Length: 363
Ligand code: RIB
Ligand code: CA
Image (cartoon, rainbow, N blue to C red; front, side, top):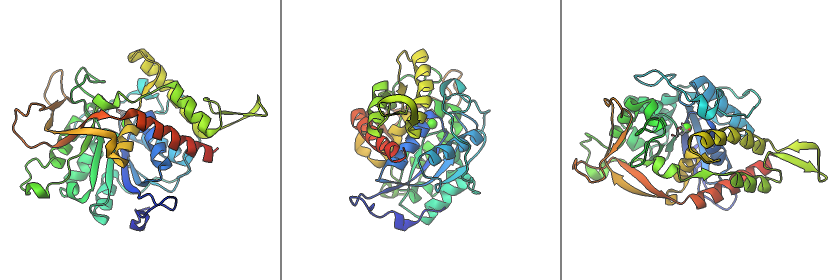
């Protein structure tokens, strides 16, 4: 379903203006939390979701994405598959982080909603052309689809209202190699294409005509968003159930019903928290993607600095590193607004309130 511009009107309740977004994801556990947050947010209109290979292969990404959207009560949202592999490398997935199926221990009924006939990158270009200056593109995955879209439509940076990227690590250690973050590491060639195209590199346009620089949330801020069991407990309480999703009827657990969204979160996050317990030595989860989605809806959640960033492609140990010119030694115009601080408490309050309310409604 293509985006209907009349949707971008104040929502019925409270007159909140909704931000129309296209989400590119590699669903994955934290991607699924971002999708739930988007659907639960009255200030968000999900125009479409495009799927990229990353955490799992792209077919599994598309299955997970549709299953989660159906769980959230939004089987109407268009979901399109993108490229099956990175631009120039073999696909490496991460079953140890998200599970072989990509959603940890969670089990969801097979997707019933159809896949879009459109190719992901084409969908991004076509919707941006239909609604010039209106759409925010939120990327939660390797940048393969976005690179293909901007190669097809060089005007894409000016056709989109904004791009918010979860990816990179601008002055913190990597999570995939010592200096590389997963989304950029999977497809560094795509990241370089996107950072150059959206940053106005080589653009002969006057400075005033250059597109808004992408907001980039790297591990510097997303690893401050540590979802802990107490966050899930607060969300479950809002939804009127136990942290494992069970609903006690008459004070006993006998014959317990289940809140489907809370049960999903509990099962998916248990896997993700066990992973972080092994690799990051805390029982919780870095929720990179929902923080990026929430920032797309409210950029005041982060403080950014305009910097010039290049992606290393030839390093024996550093390919995929987002090399950041903090001291401006290159003397080149900045191409990214890199998030350096994030109000994660305000983010978690919102996440819990919105997804908890959605879970209660969908109970
Ligand atoms: O490095 C974190 C990113 O990689 C997140 O988007 C997560 O889903 C994985 O794709
Ligand atoms: Ca992701």
